[in-house]
Length: 188
Figure 1 (cartoon, rainbow, N blue to C red):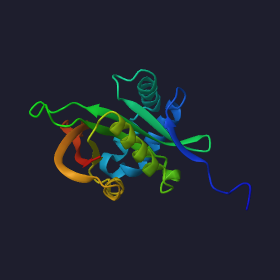
Figure 2 (cartoon, one colour):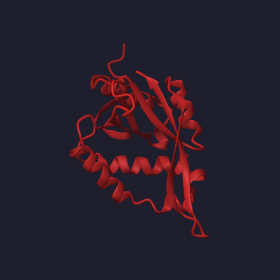
Figure 3 (cartoon, rainbow, N blue to C red):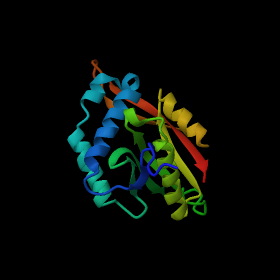
């Protein structure tokens, strides 16, 4: 029996100050790969890595309310992915409905995908939501992101009927441009 193995040390932990730079870099790299066709180079080129890092730093150090959390997936000491979760308010029309949670974001660096990091992040995120009393989880999938749709389906989430439009700027004719996201959810 060997004392050491060739397997990488992989883990998920709460994000800490200093992780925001890796999180922003991962988010930008993952979006450039997964959303190049849907968002286009013009939109992706305008994304500001420093602004992303600043927002992630605030999310890590000063979450807007209880239940907002950021997790990172690590391979050894390197951050290779992240997830963010938040509680969902109970719908006004059914105030007695079981509380839910939202998977706000889940990204893995393109070079570290298909190594189990996304599954570990999703499992940890769902565990946190359950601890906070959530009975279901919701997330969003951008049009054209078939890889994310397959991943979520394999984890037991399903597309629901919710759709939202996100503004991406204006076209050459001055008309507003947008993309659509589709809701996915599951009981947890």
